[in-house]
Amino acid sequence: MRGTDLPELRQILSKALLLAVLIPGLLLASAIEPLPFRSEVEERRFRALAEEIRCTVCQNQSLADSDAPLAQDLRRELFALLQDNRSDMEIREFMVSRYGEFVLYRPPLARHTLLLWAGPIVLLLGSLVGVVIVIQRRRRALAS
Amino acid sequence: MIRMILPLAVFLALVGLLVVGLQTAEDRKLVASPLIGQPVPAFTLPGLHDPTELRNSREMVGQPWILNVWGSWCWACRVEHPYIERLGREAGVPLVGFNWKDERDDALEWLRRFGDAWTFHMVDFEGRAAIDLGVYGAPETFLIDHQGVIRHKHIGPVDAAIFDDLMRRIIQLRSEAEA
Image 1 (cartoon, rainbow over the protein chains, first blue to last red):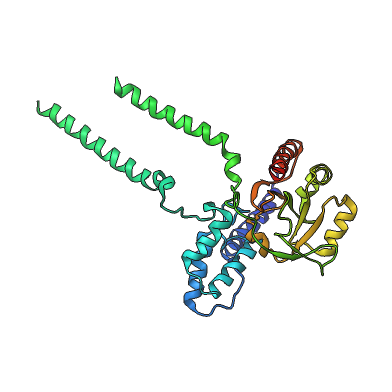
Image 2 (image 1 turned 90 degrees about the vertical axis):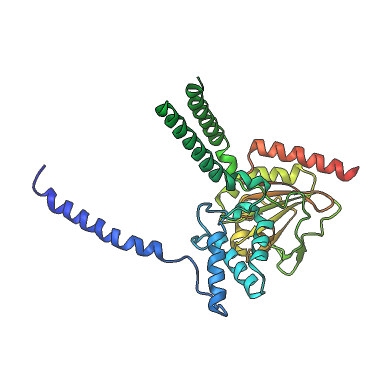
């Protein structure tokens, strides 16, 4: 390698560093446009709902994260529903009746989602019982 | 014996889960519309060629019809366009265009260039009626029966296979309407 490569490398590194500093700032910037909320509570409710509703075009982003035109439309709709004094439940129902349960990041507790919610607890309890049984058997084997 | 079989069984179950998961990965991206089996939402929108002419989503009741969501900005709409033209000519039912989040001039220019086999177009510039329809990307194609109930929805461009499937369904809806 020639010695002249080194300054170029340094230049590249400094550019990379600059990007590393700038990118997190860009990512933190919210996609949400400023809206004339009537109160701080309303704004908090808006943010909470926008966080838990999935943007269906960009499926791994919430309404709060996404810059997609549909997400903008849905945020406008969400804002209008809040202005209309609808409850959080009613707003979720509004979204679900149009886009399906898939729009909720937190699926509702129902019969068809029971395995999803109870699964981890059942697995944890099952393995605990298994561990206890194994320990007792070994203890008995040691004692005899 | 159990000590040998149990881990193997767990492993095989996990492999099975993975295989099923991989095979259905594409389907899971498509959001099944909760509107299937529901009456088409009521909305009134301006026409495309004549903005003063108001069009209502319920005016088609009495006959099956096709609602096709498109936009001049939508690349996949150009891909499906030949099949949409065929639907307009061959389906024997009204083919209504739902021009979504578009500019009127762009939309008209697009139709001039590629052809306009739709019966008429509704314009949803704001995207509010689209939310009621659960539209999340163009193109989308809805089949609506003679009672105004949404019976089928296809998300994404129509290709040869989808065209045949849609035609079969439309023939079914037409025979229901005549019965």
